[in-house]
Image (cartoon, rainbow, N blue to C red):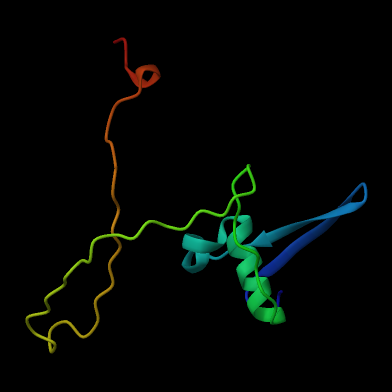
Length: 102
């Protein structure tokens, strides 16, 4: 792993298993701060397949299809590349335990 994508800071034996301390750099944090992200990188380095994530009931659920989003770049000279992400169903609210009593 150290030579392909992540630095291993330590390896600790716990019973019949091993715990790896993986150093994830900030530029990879958006996908690699979870088990699935690390597994995908390992799979790519080792040329193996990653099994799809399953819910607790063992069912694999497809991601719902989103309505198409149109981006219109008016000047390709000024905008050579565009990257975006759509986030839906976000609720901004104050949690009860965060209310200050001052």
